[in-house]
Image (cartoon, rainbow, N blue to C red; front, top):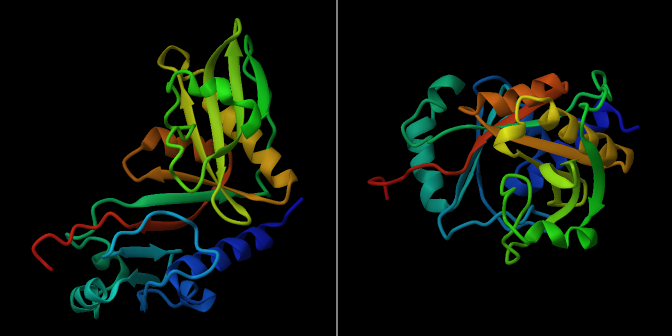
Length: 245
């Protein structure tokens, strides 16, 4: 199976492409801020960017700010000379996203919740999931997006789908994971089990699951913690520049 060192390297290599920085920039000293102009590098994950773009990322010590020229200038004016915590407390920051990857030293398959059946399906087998958009946190229903749900694990009871963990391949090695369990079936261990099954399947293929949670979503973070996921980086790209440009 893939090692923790390999996971971290591949994550940092992809972030360096996305942000137009170097791996060394991501591993800089605490409170060091690296400002780089955003570019459409080959291999960048295809998340949409507007004409004016801004993203801030930290893997625990240094900060990388990647932005178009207008916003980069504003960020430099606001952030230079400040420590990491002060930077992330600035009013332009709207809310942090937490990005988790598996900690292979803590992986545990675990028993499946009783009373349910489970099924792994590929994209060509999941057309029935689009009949009713009940699992919007797990399945991408917008077919215009440049990435789609490519793999999913289903939880069923009496033939009805009650929970789904879905994964989308956003670049050569990183897969984005989403989870949705119907209200009447929550707090039964389904979310953790479904994400974990998807996690093991992707790692077996040599790929890396990435599990995201906004900082205010405690329930989602608890799923990651129960599964032994490692908080690898934090980011915000929804920043508010109203009145500054």
